Length: 367
Image 1 (cartoon, helix red, strand yellow):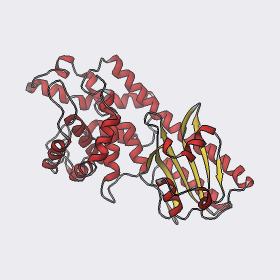
Image 2 (cartoon, rainbow, N blue to C red):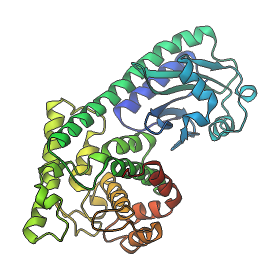
Image 3 (cartoon, rainbow, N blue to C red):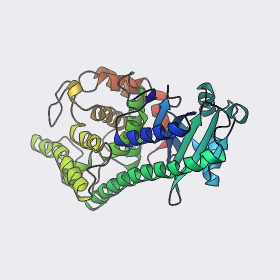
Image 4 (cartoon, rainbow, N blue to C red):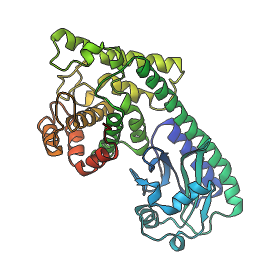
């Protein structure tokens, strides 16, 4: 692959292929990156990249309003060229500090829109000044459109699947403690864990983004569970527990049906969704359900979601319990690391408790 760093998925491979083509006529462009805009939180998150050398902005997230230079690009809906970054950027934001510290000297930034919605920003960075002449920009704009279409199509497919499942939830009268706020919190907690795992185990930005999108669908099979069991306040009988546990297989079947119906089998990382739905109740020591998998036999995305889901449930008010203090919830994770929870996943959340509580505050339950 030469000096370029990339992941192995199809969408990343296409970005890498674009970078190789650009290098043939403009070798000074040493980085292409895509940051996704989250309209709910107003943040930008690193998503895709092809970088010659180390990636300066891996696992980076910022509020768009905190970086005025990027916000102005989105507002203007027009590309921006900077021929000398050292003169144009002041090292006041983390974004500027990392870019300048990585040796980039000029840049071309293109906003990506899907209809009227900001999809994200596309960055071309070069290791020399004055690279982005009108002639170079004219060629880059063609590639920028191709990348924008690729990202928009991928996001649209995911949103189609999510919308289909939300519709199934609505018509299935799904009523549980899993409020919209809970699902937002646990999915962002899952992404936090994914990025804080030890080196070699942490998910890259692309996988972490798909985990964020798929995690809220983990318990979709509960739409098949009768209300008298799903909403029962007291302990479940053995028979009722078997019925409750069947939501895993019910969810797996539902997801597969929807994927087939909407012809989404080619959607990037679709097996991640299947793994989350099917294996998020497995325990690290093999005592969970339904497959009885253990340790690394459980897909990492399911291990991550389990920790995020349990932590948020513990620290949330439920009709049958008060919210646990964060320290008590962290102690529970620590006490059960290696039995219920993947030790690395538990440690990642325990070590990021301040960020975890910031996520709780961002997505508070409404009365």
